[in-house]
Length: 181
Image 1 (cartoon, rainbow, N blue to C red):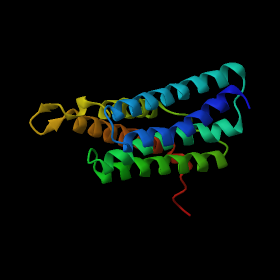
Image 2 (cartoon, rainbow, N blue to C red; image 1 turned 90 degrees about the vertical axis):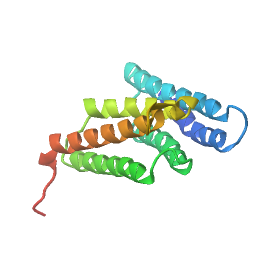
Image 3 (cartoon, rainbow, N blue to C red; image 1 turned 45 degrees about the horizontal axis):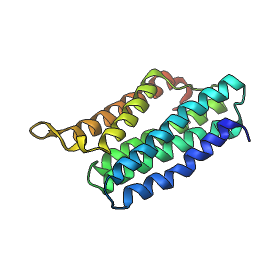
Image 4 (cartoon, one colour; image 1 turned 135 degrees about the horizontal axis):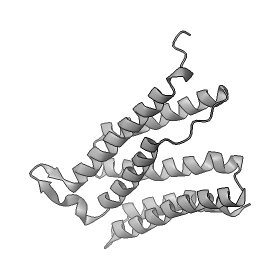
């Protein structure tokens, strides 16, 4: 197995470690979970670069890399919902966007088109990853204004960039949707 695929597998195996650290209650457990989350996120960037630079892009990597990313992010967001840091409906919007964009990509692939990640998708990913990191720290509880905490700001930004990128994917690829059948 090549190095990028090994990094993807390591990232998948880090998800239960990340969750375990979140659910265990000991001093600074969220910061240990944050370190695992950051390490997993860095392996994501690293394995993509390695695969492309070494010409080791595989079907396994094309399938598992985005799946590992989604599982890591969804694990964090589910924990935030359970912890009361995020409303469940926001998580539902994030999940619906992921399913919808994945379905659009599958439909497009069937038509011979590959939909690459757009600018808004990259912004959404960056905002979500940074938001998760901030929400795992004590900074999340700081009030910016009355009724607006850093945590709520992170949730709002995750929601807005999720809606923006999902909308952009469908507008840019609306010709792939056959509304007649």
